[in-house]
Image (cartoon, rainbow, N blue to C red; front, side):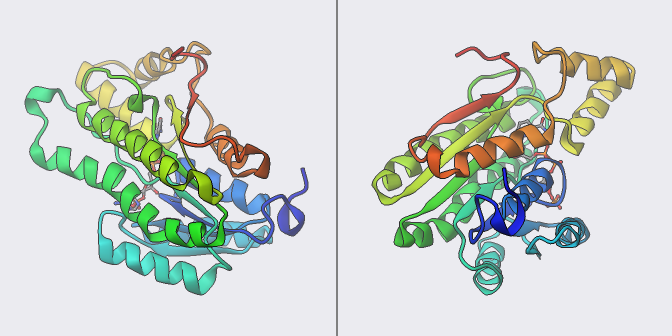
Length: 264
Ligand code: NDP
């Protein structure tokens, strides 16, 4: 596949939320390699700056904007920055997310609300900011990074799973609204991915159960029948697939990347 200015996404503009590390950083890199001009957004300025700088050093057009996706004013600022720095926003990857864990009996309302505001409301606010332009130009791709937790439940992740179920419901409704207008809206549903979020989960399991880090990691790996963590680059590849012209018939779907753990 050709990369850079001659790549399949040459001339396109892409916004990646939560692009400062983990999956978002890999997605930004893959989009840039495919030729898109990329804008990465997250709250930690040093992280988004360093991702954008790394991509520019490779010859990409890359920009960084600090943004809190839970805050409508901050998302409006992101839209303004995108209008100033990208040719257009053709691709939006709603990837910003948080994943706390607690049993239902001790889950606080504050944690529940915070999880929903990042994962679900953030996805809504960013989509609302960029979808109208895509519809107007009759081309667009929205990819929402949900989770296998959008499709099932497990102990201790009620807020996370409920918020990701909300992301998937939102995905399906937005997809239905824009189906005839050249825009697709899809969700990715990865199992555990090798990122700082998963490392935090490993540390939490080790601290709560007294297991070693290695045993806690083995427990997490075992949720994937392939016995491994998904690489961030695998999620990025799925984003590229959904952004391809030839994937225009894929709309409102939940694409699972978990090695075959969920066989729904
Ligand atoms: P990381 O914790 O490694 O990265 C999360 C990113 O989201 C960071 O850049 C973070 O930056 C950003 N973010 C968090 N809160 C906000 C906010 N309020 N506004 C803007 N950006 C924010 O997570 P992953 O890369 O692992 O996860 C990315 C997405 O993939 C999440 O939606 C997650 O739920 C989903 N996912 C992850 C899986 C995994 O196993 N890791 C599995 C399935 C889905 P900052 O804190 O600086 O704002």
